[in-house]
Image (cartoon, rainbow, N blue to C red; front, side, top):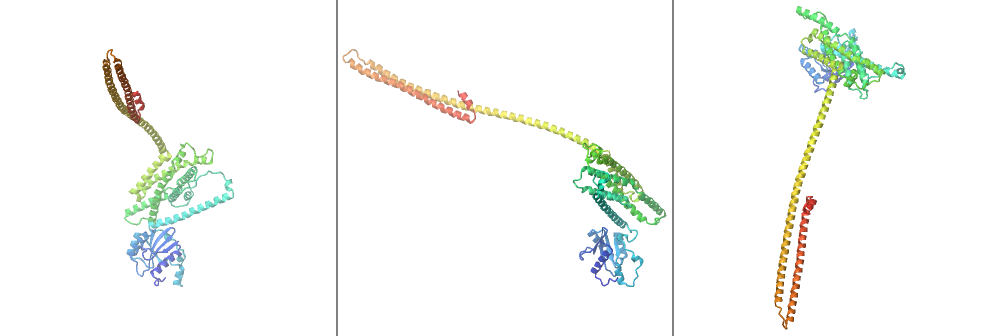
Length: 577
């Protein structure tokens, strides 16, 4: 076809149309400027292609190879491709082979109608009538290991479709049987959770048996992770055991690495012959293909061994208690289909382990015959990891040693916690008792101190009261003496006056009677004065005593008021009394 009239953008669009007509599910042209070296992003069978279109008159330089490689990486593509009407330079071809960049000639992708329009007289050959196969099936054999892996991906996609068909068919049969009442007539079966996709993968026909085990366990783990929370734990355990039973049968029926071993022996013989002869002819065709097959098988074999360990890890602690018979409450009613199925299926745990153990034993043998593993630290490390994991599973899942140890450890921890709690309570009680005694001692000391202070204050108040009373009594006594002395002086003087008057009485004279009468009147007056002085003395004395009593009463009230402030009124009253 003549491309001279096309622009670069027209050529990109034309390439995309050709790919779509060839069966690609997607072929989109990128944005032009800033496309990072990729003009078309195409997809086929789950593989993503980053394609650079080159409309060239001469040979294409290696720069295009580098651009296609970096552009495909930028767009997260699986394969980098250069699609052109021209061809690569020798340097570009070498670099493309090194970087695994594909080269597609546009002529191989031009639709038949376009070829006929270009040359009407052209007669279509038998080769042109054959439908162009998909990318990695353009030739019978891949050209490198990357193409081999992509071929395996395509085969796996076919198996994936087969699994989907089985699941759809199974779903239809189930609905049909239920609608016609067949399920009611069938022999009763036990109820369990079905890992449908994981089990379906185990039943597919696949050349690499390890890969289907890998895909099955991956689906098992995915289904387990996304399981509905409403699934009964008893149903889930039966589902796990049912899956392990199926896995055990597949592992038992597989010929572990027989083809791998045959290829290794054949390749080793060819290599020895080549080394002895100093030639590069390995003695048979397809040497590289067998090498790729063995590499892929060995990779999947080790992945499968690692994933089988995850199947055992999926058994929870309470499920292991059921399997070991150590559970206090059994999940299945006696003499039911579920109980009978459990008694049978629980043996599949040990059976699967024995097959896994056999596979790991063969892995060590394969290490000695597969040359890429010779001296390979990573491969040897994987083998040791598998053996270590197997020993761990044996202790925890098969012999239940870890469960017993955990149970004993749990009991010891519980006892230790109880003892620690008991000791803590004792210490707490002792601490509280000490605090109580200390508080009591402090309170007693405080009360004692308070009592002492109270007594001192009472004593002080009593002292003040007594001193005040003594002072008042002394003052009253002095006042009474003063009054008595004063009265005594007055009375003495009056008596002296009376005595003097009595002396003035005359003897019997004519005028004696009149004179004596005057003297007697005076004496009577003086005597009345004396009586008045005595009366005044008694009155003043009484008034002095009353004044003293008032002062003592006021002093007592003051003392009681002070005692009341410290709560010692009764004590003070008793002392005062």
